[in-house]
Image 1 (cartoon, rainbow, N blue to C red):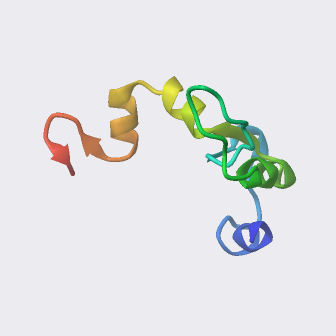
Image 2 (cartoon, rainbow, N blue to C red):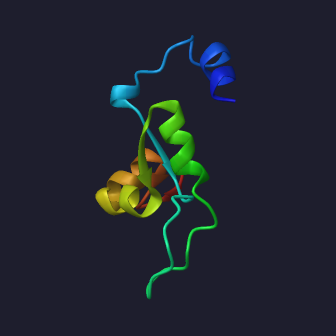
Length: 81
């Protein structure tokens, strides 16, 4: 699938140094706060594709809420756009 994306959707090139893959399947064990991940497939995919992996908790924790809303196209004062 990665090869298909590169060949047909990305013009044959992805700048892996400035790219990342975000996913929830990181292979994390159960903790007192969170259930165990269902697999490590997302982390494994990012490694095979040569992309930095960021789990969803870290990704959203690093973004300020208004910044995240703007990124996904939500106007915080007026609802969805």
